[in-house]
Length: 365
Image (cartoon, rainbow, N blue to C red; front, side):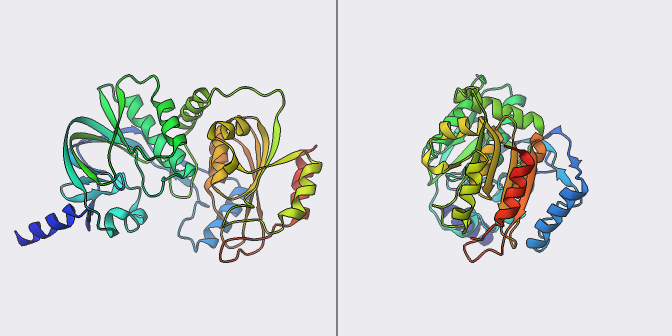
């Protein structure tokens, strides 16, 4: 009794110290089986370099396993407004947070935050993934919206999608693009300091894995079409070549970018600072791109909205990330990686300009 009262006080303060899994819950519905994506020798070498830079914490060099896709129907759960986590019988549902590595970092586990309970009748779902997707377009387009594909395509009954009103404008815009055409779905808004107790919750699995922009083709094409149509993307008179600069970012800057720019200009590349554009402009720009070059960063998320292009991504030698290689693999884009010097404490580094020029020569003028 004392133990139950103790956890009751913690839960009233928004603190949850335990978690559970629903992978074997009787309400689970498998929608698509998992599969393994294999790689050629050059791709394996790149993935091995990446794994080594992360001390093999994540290693896709022996094959990338796309997880199964599923829904789980859960009666009588709580939805936390501060994180989007789902709580079943006093324990956070791991599959609502992502994976085990996210649990220890989740605000639901380490911040005391008074959450006011509210009873809500009806059927709900949510793809909130905070703080990760808080104004972060990578997490929004790979960890959040793809999960709605599973719900909307496989739930015919009326269902309410729980969101936060303080999401970034592009997130609310693209959410409504995705919902268009699904009359069974509507949006409701939860407060940051609210905890909803709902009758039924439809929990969608995460589609993408950690450090991966790989989406099954049917999910990627669904999302691309929804965003293209929502932003009324127009076919260009000519294709463009883009260099995405991080010169104004705090981290992962290319320190010798000024040496690089004259070379890029000779090959028809234009420098773009994505943060200076509206999201509609970013989507349109990437749709028009035939080639994209950039240091690793969230700006490359917009490759998802390219029709077809070649990609050269820069990495510091000590931190080689796989997110956009796997995105390109899923979309059939030609991808190349260029590894620079070891990054400093802000992950800033230099790239070998001559090697960039060799790549430019290979794609032609």
